[in-house]
Length: 201
Length: 201
DNA sequence: CAAAAGTAAATAAACGTTTACTTATTAAAT
DNA sequence: ATTTAATAAGTAAACGTTTATTTACTTTTG
Image (cartoon, rainbow over all chains, first blue to last red; front, side):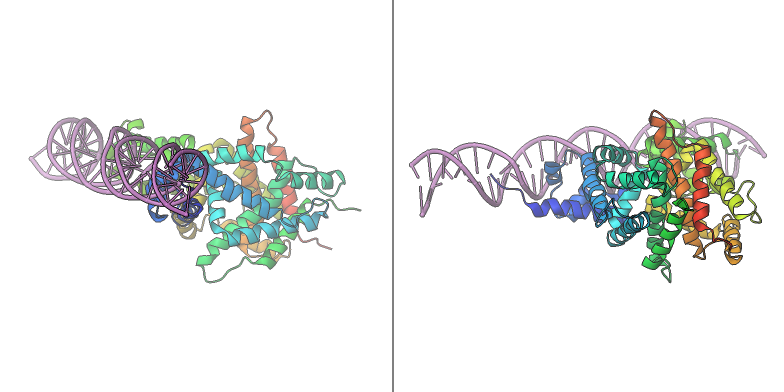
């Protein structure tokens, strides 16, 4: 029995990610993907049931999985509030700056009904990934360190800005000067932390 | 000379918005649009040069224009910082809750290279829309009320969370209970304001 | 009756997917 | 050790459908 060529599987994934990041999801066709990956269209169908299956698996494996892993690197739920939040902010910033295609696909995931659905399903099933963050926030809430709001609201307040700043970072790549750097990320993060904190007096 | 039927022009726009909001941008085809709007495909091409032209004009007129108008309603750049920011937050929340299709298309605009480009071009050309917000933030920065950061960074910190909360609002429509309401928006807004403010002591 | 608005039907290209076939590899048989 | 048979991996070319857009024609008005 002929063994499968792992290089071809990888070529499919990396080529697909490149097309999506550079030309947009709407310009990813199975035939184009096959051509650019130097394989036959049929080969894609050996690994993936159809285009939808490809996109969903690509999205889950290449985006959500590696994103969550990167975000939680060196994060520990026992950390102090400011320390933990800043660690996640810097992880998010560094990961996306180094993986623009993941950021682009992540943005698509928020608008495309198909990917959005798979995102939500995965988020529920693989909730353990963000569970440390959940417990981290819960603990600091219980200890009276931060404002008592539902987890989803706290998450929005704490992490929506850094994603928007990453977006600004990429948009400023085409402009004369970059205004988003690590120092600015840290400054911004401190603002957000200050807003969430309850003064202990 | 036969006059153009304004109803047909409107049918094109409203039908296109409906398809995008309900079935996604990827399911909007010119033929489908024509069929559902009860017109001939050729009629679309009398008003729009091609599909790209249609999408860009739709996006600019139906989304950016009305969004910016709604956001600045009853906002005055002479307002106090907290008052002005909260006004915008509530405007954003109420507008999108009442116009889900605009929110969906807005999200598309952030990921689709085509729409994203038109968004940026429009943002520069029609910068007068957000100019009041720009001056509002500049003034409060100069008066030492809020942290001194570039406009884009201040905008990200102040307004990214409310868009994320609107997203949460729509996702919670399919769940047993809604956690996002006006009161929660106001609470969240106060957190963000507190983070930006410089204590006057 | 001039002329733009509008239509139905057709165009070529691109789409996702499949068919019919070849190739490469392993495990069993020699 | 060599050959053979089985079989999944892989390919090239095609499938029918849908796509954006156009052609050739009709309708409606000033």
